[in-house]
Image 1 (tube, rainbow, N blue to C red):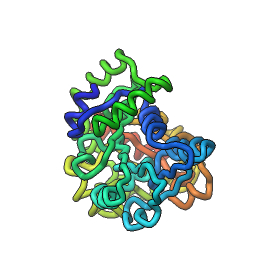
Image 2 (image 1 turned 90 degrees about the vertical axis):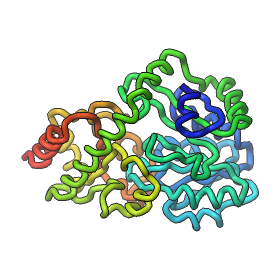
Image 3 (image 1 turned 180 degrees about the vertical axis):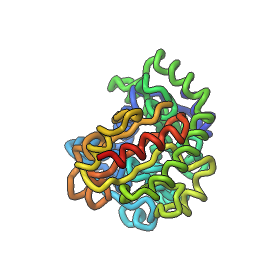
Image 4 (image 1 turned 135 degrees about the vertical axis):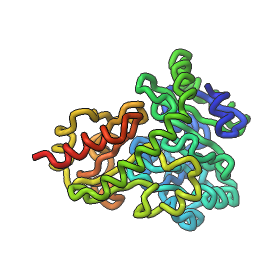
Length: 325
């Protein structure tokens, strides 16, 4: 599995870990020590943010955050103690797109490794070719594709990966053979699934944007997305399978979720079946409410993980739920 993902990402070596968070944690535990400094992108996945801001800080590791769409804000944050910059290709759940080439120019110039969480964008671009040092995936999601495994992977320079392998083994964070076999099954159809899901996601995003009950739609393929031009340049194989949209408030979000007949609620994503989640009460429930509001992760925000169903069937379910009384 690691070898195949290395081939996709054009990496020297890779390590399969017990989960996506295990891949991130193992890399951080390898690179940082007391007094180190880490920089993360604003709006980073909730658990990744918690790892850096609440757990590593207990061991004397400090952090700063920056806007990944404005790489010029990164340079002034890097210090002699900075050991890693961590960003997402496409953020969760606001689907902001990082300017990976520009970010990599800054990190290379400063001699700081850049790690890219590529979970939302497998096959859409190759971060290492754009200058990243490490790429990680939560294989649980789009690569696995069937919601029946939990794995992660990190790929990068051979020497660094061997150091991460030693740390991951010591902390019990390595993956297991059976779930790696399941992930290989998912990898075989990833390209087909990615193309289909991206096309359907764009179709649904456009329809949601035109619906009166939807106050905001976030999808990189829409011209209204703040990073649309960057996404067109960076993402060469579609805009991804995730669509986020706002229905106005928590009450409206709960009503929509209860009214859907065929799209189930699931906190994970990337299945062949379309699912949805409510970030404020799942992936980001432990984050500071003021920060969530500032980022735009509102109580009415819904994240849709688009699968392989007929787009008309999906839209029928969404439309009826939006219009239910």
